[in-house]
Every structure is written in C-alpha cells, then in structure tokens.
Length: 469
Image (cartoon, rainbow, N blue to C red; front, side, top):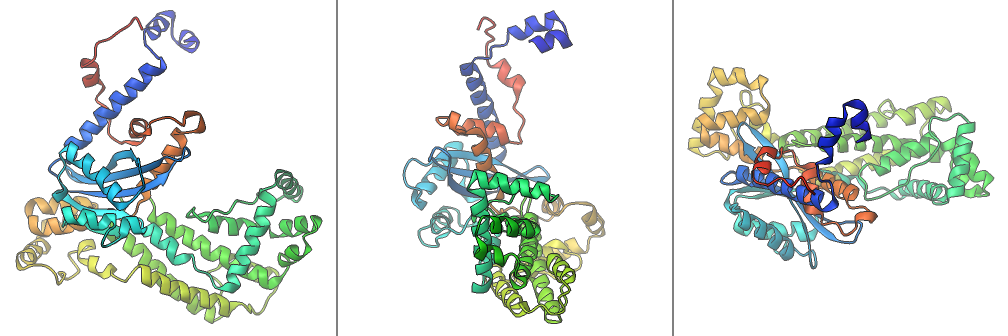
C-alpha cells in the first residue's frame, strides 16, 4: 500500500484496501482457480484421443504422490498439461495406482478407449507385463501402447563402468565427499581455489539419482585436479592425493569427464516439452553412431573427440595414451547397452518424418496405403510439409485422409519421456517446504504449472463480492 501511494495516489490505496487477502481467502481463490482450470482441461479432453505420462515419488513430508500428465489433440496441435496430482494413501502398488487413475477418469467422464499411450519408468510396478500398471491399463485401453521413458533408458544404458574406470569414479567421489561433507574443509578448499585464481571455488556433490550429476562432478573435479591434490596433501591424505598427480589416473579422469559430458548433452536433448518418439529415436541413433566413430578414432590414436583428454596429453607432452584399450572396452560396452535398451527401430518412423521420400510402411492396410499414395501424390501437401511442424502437418492430413492421418497421430501422440512428471515433482519441492508440510498440494500445483488461463470473469460473475472482509 505504501508503494501504491507513492507510485499512484491515495485513491488507489483506498481501492486496494477493499481486497481481502487473508490466508483463508487466498486458499479459497486458489481452489476456485484450480477447479476452473481443471474443468477447462476435462472439457478439452472429453471425446478426444489422449496419452498419459505417469510417475510416483515421495515428497519432503514422506507423502507418496502420483502425478499424471496428459497430451491430447487440441484444434491443430498437440497440447500437454497436468491431469492430476493425487496422494497415494497406502502402498504404491500397481493396483493402487490404477485405481487412482481409473477413479479420476471415470469421475471426469473420460473414456479409457480414447487412451493411445502410457509412458512410465521401468519399475516393475509401472512396467510389469502381467501385473504392472502397463498390464492393467491395457486391459481397459487395448489401443494404448506403453513407452519406457527414453531418459531413464539412457541413464540405465550409461551407468555400467569397467572395474578400472569404476575405481577412478570411486576415488573422485571419496575426495569430493571429504571436502563437501565438512563445512570447515569446504571453506578451506574454497580459499585455496581463490588464492590460485581458479574459475570455480567448490566441487559438486555427487548424486546417483540425478541425471546430469556424474558428468558435472567429473568435469569440475578434472578442472580442479591440481587444487584437490594440494588440499589432500595438506590434509595428510597422501595416498588419495597421489592419484590426482598420477598421469594414468588423470587420463582416465579426463576421458570420463569428456564421455559423461557427451552423455549429459544427449540427456538434455531428450528433455523438454513436445518431444515425440521419432525425434528422440533420431537423437539416440545419432549418439550410437557417434560411439562407433569415437571408438574407431581412438583405435587410430586420435583423441580429437575428447577435449579434456586431448588437452591433457598435449600439455603433458604424452606421445602414447596407454589406457586406450580401457577406453575402447568402455565404448564397446556402452554401444551394446544402448543397442539393448534402444533396439534400432528408428527406420520405422521414416515415412512419418518425410513421407514424400520414404516408402510406405509394410504394416499398412490396403485402404491406408491407398491414402498414403494419394497424400504423397498431392503437390499441395508436398509444399505444406516443409513449412509446418510434424504434428501440424499430420493433423491437417487427418482431416482429408483420416486413415493414414490417424495412424500417424497414434505414433506422435504418446509421450516418449516422463520429463514433465519430473518437473512436476520439482514444483512440489518448491511449494511444499518444511514450513508448509501439511499443505494439500493438488490445487496449488495445478495453478502453479498449468498452461491453461483461468476464466476470471466467469468466476467473478459466479461469486458475490464481500468488501467488508
């Protein structure tokens, strides 16, 4: 009010005083806004095809939450939004999770028959073929295709290390924990870094559950390797300190920092909204082909693809990099793991990415193939294709050629990752702090992250104004 009186006038202050801002009033308004946004969302979904993205986690108050996002056709585009966030009262079993989702869809009047996809992580509760959530949903939604989150698969494919490289990672984590878990040691190390004029003055905690943690920790430790060596020697940890001056150890550390930086880059490419199966399949296929190229170059003694390793060998004038067989073994193993978690099926989407140059897929029915021929022979559609996104193009095709259009939309509609659920849990952590541990998060979360705009005029017309309180 003081700010309004300075910037505007006293008349504005008087108007501002009539607005009730008590805790209960704000809570009711959040509830009203959330209900209006939810009502809009359900109206948009009813009678339309949709796909779900589901995940469960435990918040700071030890409450188990189930978050579901939905993607659906809205006019000429695919739209994503939070469907619900519900507390799990008992154990987070597949039956319990299905019961929560089924009850919500039934109360909202949304039919399971319209569900075309379900994306979860690879946990047995979610992904089980006989008794998991996947199996329970397929019983009521036979058209729904289950997708194992691409980001989770990438993390699983990259986690295995040979004993030789795993020892390097273990030593790095030991050094980092020694510095970071002791406030005094952390301050002393920061002072040492500042005196030596480094760009950074702290190492990063390692968390195995965070997607990008390993790459960031290794890169920071390699950057501060000299400072860590000096600090550990001053602390009397000579055995551990000696490893940070050992050329073999540092070459392996340089390689790991480079490789996991590349994995972090892939991970970031898989993250984000509006990601579709064909696009992410291309990203993974590209990385697997790069692995093959990196291995071939290393066999020839060429380290151009590994920035830290190349710079380290040049600075120390190393003519031969002896751990190359170890690096080649790791790259070969990683290729096998990626091929296991990502079977090479990107070719099946070629007709979807560029229908005018690719041949028709073999699984098309006669009617669908006829419409595919009609579409690829249409010069007007050929001209539209480069100027539209993949979703916009195929939704437009569906209006004129419904059979081939529906087949394409059925591939583009399902989620490829559970990224949105992870962002939802991040929002929960921000909203439900230790000072608000009893907060029922559902309405607040919907208002905080939903992309739909509340209909304020409609809400105001349905409520009576009470200026007295």
